[in-house]
Length: 282
Length: 331
Image 1 (cartoon, rainbow over the protein chains, first blue to last red):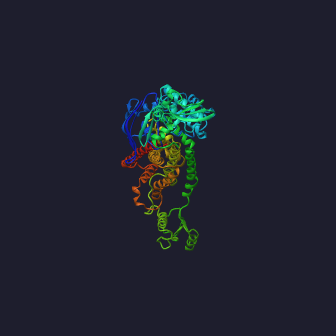
Image 2: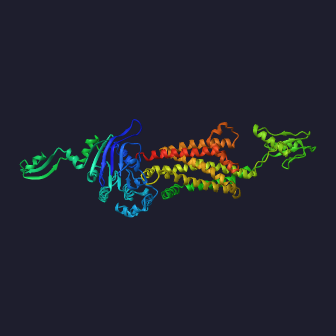
Image 3: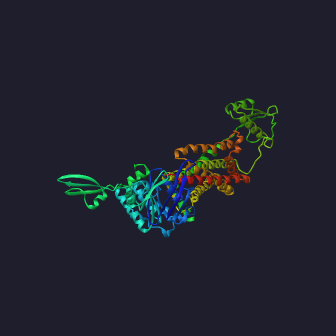
């Protein structure tokens, strides 16, 4: 679906934003593009969505070189959720969606009310102006805008931003459903839980370079110290011991009366983020 | 393409309505019409200088009926004491001598010429009549032209910037970058809506203040000049709104542009201030184009139209550039 080779981009002479990125995104994959602010995530996404021109290297989408791909047919096949919910504040969610969907062929459009219903949009607000919406409602209306055209390739920038935990769960479920339909998802986020739960593969980008690219599981395994922490009871006392994972192959290697819990010491995706980008999450 | 254009156009109309831009234009139309009909025309109709003649021997034979005869030199002095703007003519020795209170040099010359022209209506002092407009009709066309120029240059320009700043503030311009439509349509729909609104404004203002019968003959030329000015100002407004950060910054730029566009033109066209360099001012030519259109004077040279179309094309290219820059900005 997306093939990027030696992608470079610079804002002016001395401001090189991307230093030769290489990655591919397969059809129907959810690909996480993770990195701190200013690392080159947005620049990459803007190049892929045709907003920024003048890049180096080669980029192809839908099997076509990007320079030829950014036609109206291309834009009909993609959906983009921006980091901020950009909507006409004086129009209602329905009117916003009617307006934005009017640029697509009727045959590919989903039913507006059905999409909003799927996003658990409060029916009372359907005809009220966006200016009266909460952040979460705006994000729902914005997500509906990205989904309304049934895109084959979906670019999502911080999709769960501004949502409460149940809203975030709902959005993850919807993104999963999109994947099941065969939609390819290019996900840009700081939310490592989203990335961990949703992404088939993730790339960590820092200072315009991809520092690591693999499945979240592989990345965590590769960086694991292969230790487990065991909490247990022995002679009436609660104890804790850290052991090397291979030691467990022959059973618990110490005397105990009862095992309370076993925790692997596998790193989280957040640990990976810090390791590969050199910066913590705010 | 037409479907996309229609969607953009409909949305822009809604933005204009919610921004009360049409209401503002309608308000200005009413205000200008009231000013022209209840203020300006009445003011311009005010009596000119009174001319008093003392000619006991009846030496002046072609005197206009507007001249008031006085029986004696004392009466002449006495009326001039009361009417300090009046002009007295003492022809008691056969040779007319002017008597009036000294004012400014130009006004004094005007008063002298006027008095002599009344004394000899067919003589050298009488002004030739150009065109077929009555003084009132001329005044109506003059002021309508000025108000239309001001409305498009200053008020309409503000309107287009206000609408675009709203869209910029909401971030929706960036959404258009990923929609399946030609990006130029986004600019074109705004130009068309402002052009149409300016043309409708020009028609209504002209009909209400110049009169229906005169409007019919001058309207095509007026609309052509209105269209040129409207497009130039709308594109300038778009550039400013895209380049500048917020409406506060824009107000300063607006002030500078409005002063640049309007002041030299009005000063040169309406006052005795002589600005030799005004012919190098691009808006002077547009203003004169509009004025000539109101007075039915043949169209300006092809170079004027080439220049105007070239300016519109250059401004459109600049808008395209800054528009692409805006949609590429960070969210």
